Length: 244
Image (cartoon, rainbow, N blue to C red; front, side, top):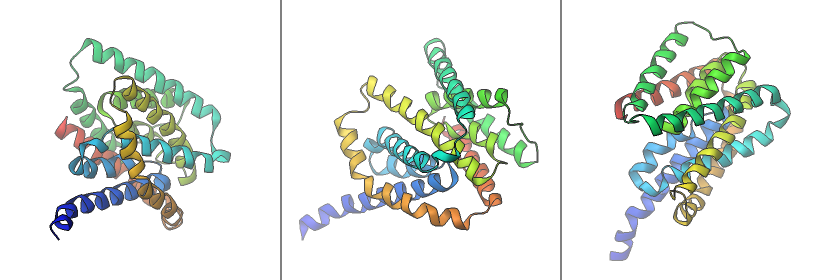
């Protein structure tokens, strides 16, 4: 009896972790983004081992599988431009981290994201051009490296596109972005066997969210997709601005 009571908090925490991953996975597979935003706050409270490595691993796995499912819809030219921008932004972020204090940068990015959401929600539309794409993806690379949030810049650029086009643009981009982040964590010793075991433990939640996503895709209209992108971007920006 005593052992059962002792084990209960661990079991409850594990179930909550699975629910957090499942909700985030369903959102990301159906909208194109959202796993990190849904899962990180929950998992960080349950056990720090889940963040950031295992969350990034699941975001990578989900984006890779979903991208393969959408491979016929991927615009290869746009993906190449966005990946070039991602690499440029990642290199710029590394240079920033080496030359200036990074403590205030996430907060600044958060304020910029919230301002961008407000402007786009008011009706301003950024043209989806090569220049806009490389700028947005470079900004995503900078933010992702420094603050752990890749999504808002690139998502805001695609928000007026069709749901299928949004998913086929964002998911391959996040596949590369998360892989780069994982390799960086492994290089500095922050993603090893302990984090790999934690990632494996969360796989049932990832699978549940992925298989629930087709239902969400059927019930969500283009307007709902855009509102979700704006809401997720705004919340991530506020979290960055508040927590830094």
